[in-house]
Amino acid sequence: MKIFCIGRNYVNHAKELNNPVPESPVIFMKPSTALLINNRPLYYPEFTSDLHYEAEIVIKICKNGRHVQPGFAHTYYDQWTLGLDFTARDVQIQLKSKGLPWEKAKAWDHSAAIGTFQPIAHVANIQALNFSLRKNGQIVQAGNTADMIFSIDQLIVQISKYFKLQTGDLVFTGTPAGVGPVQIGDVLEGFVQEQKVLSCEIK
Figure 1 (cartoon, rainbow, N blue to C red):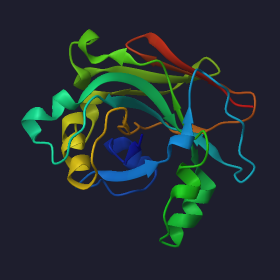
Figure 2 (cartoon, rainbow, N blue to C red):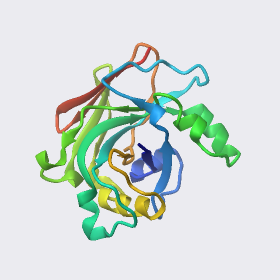
Figure 3 (cartoon, rainbow, N blue to C red):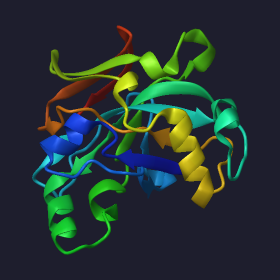
Figure 4 (cartoon, rainbow, N blue to C red):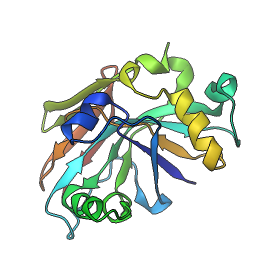
């Protein structure tokens, strides 16, 4: 199982981090050991002092494929949920300043929290989902998949040019503006269309 992640897929998020808006999807990966499931707590890593949340719609791949054509992309995923791409922002800034890969900032154990998966068939349009993240009861991020720079189908096409898609793979589709830090004791709750699908306490 692979975890594909898309960076800078919402214009306002790219701008808030002073990054250029990409002309093609920014793709990076996390290992399976990054998964954090069943609303388990996240233990604050000792190697960072600036841990950030990034809430994202996550889709699950339902069949194998390579070089997927645009007209068939929608048949390669059948479930969605909300996820948290936890990022050691201070580590990421150091790595980026040296032109180095992001894995130490993005791909560490339990850095990819995921909520309860829901069938795609239960939503009218996956590209029109409202979602939000609350920290200690206050909304800190709110987005809609209609605002993605690259749609989910476009991401499937692009990812499959370089990597074989396999059943069970996950795609974190990018985060909107509003990312920010967490502290020990914070509780993060993710909502999609007013339905709570994710909870994570920082310990």
